[in-house]
Image (cartoon, rainbow, N blue to C red):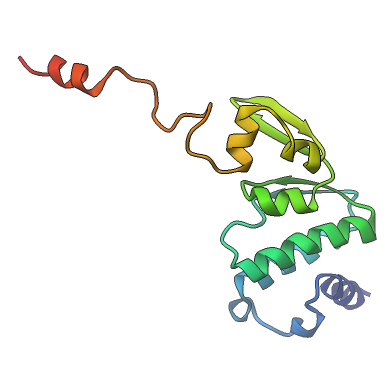
Length: 151
């Protein structure tokens, strides 16, 4: 019975053929999918992902993103995905929440987020250096600080 469960969950993530591999023999993307198979083994209603796309090559990233969406639909799951990969997240999400400064800066469908007139949201989803979120931490001018340290 356990073997059957393992095979079914590996099939769900596209890795049934790799069931005999040792951990050292799987790629990073495959390891993520094995972890996902393990997570769905007990048929949960909710899955939480913390940066599921981090460190993946573009093909593995796309595979994992589509797998999350496919499993949500096939197993009627709810997933909470924490990610800085805006493009992939907007492609698979039904609802998006953008946090800034410990508060909700925006909430809505991917389309609503893309069309937001909130400058912070636009800076974040477009990866813009200039905008409400500043690169430099507030400080006095460098000239004033340098002059203050001289006797």
